[in-house]
Length: 335
Image (cartoon, rainbow, N blue to C red; front, side):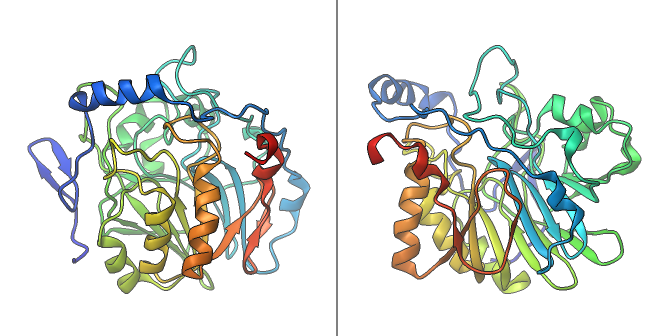
């Protein structure tokens, strides 16, 4: 498939391929599955605490590429002299209310105020686990460029971000971060909406980040589709693919990949190393909290994929395959 810009049907954006994003029709089977579920969706052992050594940021990464996984899809990416924060979520819950909804398994390992100077913030789409009101408000008044999918700027502006610092991107659009780093929005298979009545009225995207020396793919949220092959052909190969592996379920197979399809996406993208995200932070599905990463280890071995799995909060240089296996310390009796 080609990488054309997004398309709409009326006010609503549509996916690059036909997609079942769930909805009210799936509520009954999902509720039944939820009631019968025996999985350890929330860790029995409290995860963490994790703590970022912020002094590390005083020294640039020797390799030019270093990643700090804050949790879920929030990452501090240091690439060829630029610092980019993705889908920043620091709140306790990913919900329209901080009184209820999915609660994080561990506290963010670094405080927002302790972040090093940023060159950009990327927001992939408007779901609560990727776009957090209180976190965005922290950046109000700061001169940090935001790059987001079409339509998402309305929220950033509403919460106080100066519109002159916001660049909205359609699929296929590119923009500069400084004078030597390019960010490009690419298609994803997902959906959007922060309420019952505004589904798909803003766009969802994945992103290519290209510096003078390194090139990475930030997949955000997406189900499998053949667009990964097109992205790999046009923008690849990638030094690192950052792909979601959690929050999948049999009642919504089109909008989240799970570890098997995520590993297939990595191969299609022509990635060298694969970093799994969107797992081990919030309870958003019905699988064991550790199942995505345990299964990914098996698929990676079968498919000869080199993984990059840093511990939450630990700034880690990208020098080759690395697996911290941090989650195993918190599994009950090896589960």
